Image (cartoon, rainbow, N blue to C red):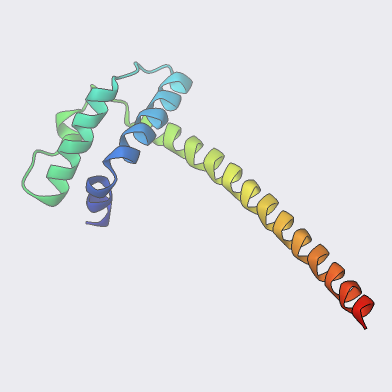
Length: 115
Protein backbone atom coordinates (compact mmCIF):
# COMPACT_ATOMS: atom_id res chain seq x y z
CA UNK A 1 0.00 0.00 0.00
CA UNK A 2 2.80 2.44 0.91
CA UNK A 3 4.54 1.67 -2.37
CA UNK A 4 1.44 2.50 -4.38
CA UNK A 5 0.72 5.65 -2.38
CA UNK A 6 4.29 6.83 -2.85
CA UNK A 7 3.90 6.55 -6.61
CA UNK A 8 0.64 8.48 -6.46
CA UNK A 9 2.06 11.27 -4.29
CA UNK A 10 5.42 11.45 -6.10
CA UNK A 11 4.66 11.13 -9.80
CA UNK A 12 7.24 13.76 -10.63
CA UNK A 13 10.10 11.82 -9.04
CA UNK A 14 9.15 8.20 -9.67
CA UNK A 15 9.03 8.46 -13.45
CA UNK A 16 12.58 9.87 -13.95
CA UNK A 17 14.02 7.50 -11.33
CA UNK A 18 12.48 4.43 -12.97
CA UNK A 19 13.48 5.58 -16.43
CA UNK A 20 17.08 6.22 -15.34
CA UNK A 21 17.19 2.86 -13.56
CA UNK A 22 15.82 0.98 -16.55
CA UNK A 23 18.08 2.85 -18.96
CA UNK A 24 21.21 2.04 -16.92
CA UNK A 25 20.19 -1.61 -16.52
CA UNK A 26 19.24 -1.97 -20.18
CA UNK A 27 22.58 -0.56 -21.30
CA UNK A 28 24.47 -2.92 -18.98
CA UNK A 29 22.67 -6.12 -20.02
CA UNK A 30 22.11 -4.97 -23.62
CA UNK A 31 18.32 -5.03 -23.40
CA UNK A 32 16.13 -2.78 -25.56
CA UNK A 33 15.53 0.66 -24.02
CA UNK A 34 11.87 1.59 -23.64
CA UNK A 35 10.39 5.07 -23.78
CA UNK A 36 9.59 7.34 -20.87
CA UNK A 37 5.91 7.27 -21.82
CA UNK A 38 5.90 3.46 -21.71
CA UNK A 39 7.40 3.47 -18.19
CA UNK A 40 4.76 6.00 -17.14
CA UNK A 41 2.05 3.68 -18.42
CA UNK A 42 3.61 0.77 -16.53
CA UNK A 43 3.72 2.76 -13.27
CA UNK A 44 0.07 3.74 -13.72
CA UNK A 45 -0.92 0.12 -14.41
CA UNK A 46 1.05 -1.10 -11.39
CA UNK A 47 -0.61 1.50 -9.16
CA UNK A 48 -4.06 0.47 -10.42
CA UNK A 49 -3.21 -3.18 -9.84
CA UNK A 50 -1.86 -2.54 -6.32
CA UNK A 51 -4.68 -0.25 -5.19
CA UNK A 52 -7.72 -1.64 -7.02
CA UNK A 53 -8.72 -4.29 -9.53
CA UNK A 54 -6.37 -3.39 -12.38
CA UNK A 55 -4.59 -5.91 -14.59
CA UNK A 56 -1.40 -7.48 -13.27
CA UNK A 57 1.44 -5.57 -14.99
CA UNK A 58 3.87 -8.44 -14.45
CA UNK A 59 1.72 -10.52 -16.79
CA UNK A 60 0.71 -7.68 -19.13
CA UNK A 61 4.26 -6.54 -19.87
CA UNK A 62 5.96 -9.96 -19.81
CA UNK A 63 8.36 -10.23 -22.72
CA UNK A 64 8.19 -6.50 -23.46
CA UNK A 65 10.16 -5.19 -20.50
CA UNK A 66 13.26 -6.68 -18.90
CA UNK A 67 12.72 -7.06 -15.16
CA UNK A 68 16.45 -7.77 -14.83
CA UNK A 69 17.24 -4.37 -16.39
CA UNK A 70 14.98 -2.69 -13.84
CA UNK A 71 16.53 -4.55 -10.90
CA UNK A 72 20.14 -4.04 -11.97
CA UNK A 73 19.66 -0.40 -12.94
CA UNK A 74 17.73 0.57 -9.83
CA UNK A 75 20.28 -1.21 -7.61
CA UNK A 76 23.18 0.64 -9.25
CA UNK A 77 21.26 3.91 -9.03
CA UNK A 78 20.53 3.32 -5.34
CA UNK A 79 24.16 2.50 -4.50
CA UNK A 80 25.58 5.48 -6.41
CA UNK A 81 22.99 7.88 -5.00
CA UNK A 82 23.52 6.69 -1.44
CA UNK A 83 27.31 7.04 -1.78
CA UNK A 84 27.04 10.56 -3.19
CA UNK A 85 24.51 11.66 -0.56
CA UNK A 86 26.48 10.03 2.25
CA UNK A 87 29.71 11.72 1.22
CA UNK A 88 27.95 15.07 0.76
CA UNK A 89 26.33 14.79 4.19
CA UNK A 90 29.68 13.91 5.77
CA UNK A 91 31.39 16.89 4.09
CA UNK A 92 28.64 19.31 5.15
CA UNK A 93 28.67 17.92 8.70
CA UNK A 94 32.46 18.28 8.91
CA UNK A 95 32.35 21.84 7.55
CA UNK A 96 29.66 22.90 10.03
CA UNK A 97 31.49 21.23 12.94
CA UNK A 98 34.81 22.91 12.10
CA UNK A 99 33.06 26.28 11.66
CA UNK A 100 31.37 25.82 15.03
CA UNK A 101 34.69 24.94 16.73
CA UNK A 102 36.39 27.95 15.20
CA UNK A 103 33.58 30.20 16.36
CA UNK A 104 33.91 28.84 19.92
CA UNK A 105 37.66 29.37 19.86
CA UNK A 106 37.22 33.03 18.92
CA UNK A 107 34.55 33.89 21.53
CA UNK A 108 36.61 33.40 24.74
CA UNK A 109 39.51 35.53 23.46
CA UNK A 110 37.10 38.36 22.57
CA UNK A 111 35.53 38.30 26.05
CA UNK A 112 38.91 38.28 27.85
CA UNK A 113 39.96 41.44 25.97
CA UNK A 114 36.95 43.31 27.37
CA UNK A 115 37.91 42.61 31.01
